[in-house]
Each structure stands twice: as C-alpha cells, then as structure tokens.
Length: 300
View 1: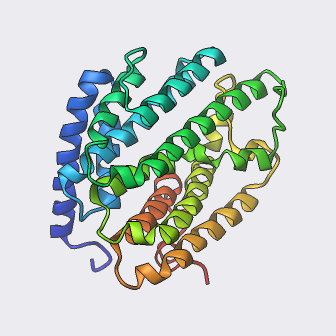
View 2: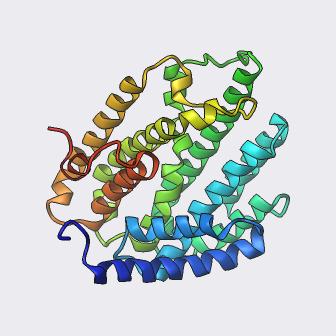
C-alpha cells in the first residue's frame, strides 16, 4: 500500500482536474462541439497530474491549448486533403500568434484567436512571447511535414525537397507539440525564478520533445501500420529498429534529468514540471515499458 500516493493527494489532483475539465468542456462546446467527454477528461487530468500544485484556474489555459493541439491533429489526420489549404491555415495560425489579431476563417483559427486574446493579458506573456511564437511555428511545421511525408509514403512517392530519412524526421521533432503545450504552463504557473532559469529549462524541454515523440511512435506503430491510407508518419517507418528508438528515448530522458539536476535538487517547480512532463509522455504512450525505477531514478 505504501507504493501508492496518499489518498488526500489523489483527491487534490482530482479536484483540480475536474475544475480544468469544466472550463475545457465549456470552451469546446463553443468552438469545437462533438468531442467525446473522455478525450477532454484525459487532457484535463493529465494537466493536473503534470502539475498537481497548480490551481484549477492556472490549469485552464494550458488545458485548452493541449486540447487545441489534439483538434488540430485530428483535422490534419482526418479531414485535410489539400496542401494549399494546410499551408494557408499554418500561415494564418502563426499570424494570430505573432500579431494577436483575431481570425475567423476556420474554427481552429477562431479558437486560437480566443486563446491568444486571453494569453496576451497574462503578466509574463511579453517575456515568453518569443518562446511561444517559436513553439507554435515549430509544431505547425512538424505537423505539416508529417502530413506531407505520411501521404507521400502511402502513395509510394518522395515529395520534392524531402529526403524521407531519419535525420529529416528528427529535424521535425517539433511535431511532438511539446513547446506549444508547455509554454502555456510557464505563462500561468511559472515561478518567480522561471525567467532566470530558462537557460536550463529550455534545453531540458528540447530533450522532452524527443522523449514524447519517440514514446508516441513506439506506442502507436502497430495501430498506424494497420491503417494504410491514413497518412501516418512514424520513425519506425524509416528503417530503424525499436531497440534503436528506445535507446535514443532513454538517452534523451536521462539528459532531461541530468540537465535539470541542479534545479531539481532545490525543489524548483519549473524543473519538476518539465521532468514530470517527460515522465508523463513515457507512461502515457508506453505504460510499463520503462519501469518505475527508471522513471524515478534514471539510467545507471
């Protein structure tokens, strides 16, 4: 029984998750109706689990953005059929983020405009705006690349300008969306020392891009291979072995921990949140693939 967290901690996380879920359900009903409640619940409780010290209000905008990324991913995977339309959407999303000007040309643009309007009012936004803008642009570029490469593979083609190899895949690691989903956490519940510690936190977040993308690839490859014609793009489709991918994942996870070690030693919550995000990615996509000892203590 001692291996489980105390029940009062579970209740606290559940309470915060429910608060975030309520906000998310109301927001989605306005902007993207029709999503299953369990999808929204998974996002809200994941946010509460990554940062169990954050209040429901502090979790609100991070939860909305994490769900927005899922809506975008679903749109590209299930609805988008024309690269010109995708490029226009990408450009307009980036413009909303850079300028703060609302755009009503697409439901994803309307909801992003609403989110951006709320974010720019936060005290820390001016300091984090460059990171936020780069994170969004990188995610969108990674999603675009996955769409082009995935559909080209299904058709047996090599698109002009693409190498279709592992190095190119890893160059688009921003498709993990980690930069886009984590900067909102810094905006809403970053600590007073956040800005001073960005030179440590940002490299660890970069490693987390790899952890999340590779864990996702290992966990979803069987499903993706069973769905030909869906435009999937996965590192295991580039001739590397699962063992090679696991090794890279483990090295990146170890780098997260070692890079954050000085801040973790002081209990810095910004560092703890990045580490918990990396751990969440592994547990979410791979379950028991990496045992508890590795998640807690890292590789020997």
